[in-house]
Image: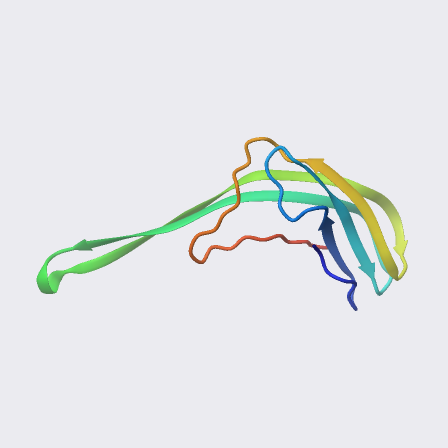
Length: 129
């Protein structure tokens, strides 16, 4: 999992396996590629999980030439997980190079399984602020 080192400052997470289930222990490396010097104050790994739902309901009213179709859109999102692990407190400049930090944390029991239906999507995002 993860990407190779790129030609710009980048960050990614490389885990020891591609899929995890509730109650399991996640282990991996946070990889940082620095091409241009950057000043940092800390490096944190944040894990977020959301449950998203979306569906439509179509209703017809009237008859004959007065028949109308009305579609209602429904949806919502609930945050299931929001955990931040500090990896490093560095009040310094990082010179060009590749850096790695080990990360490990347990997933809580009771998290739902991932799935998708129709055009729904799932994935992971790594951000650098």
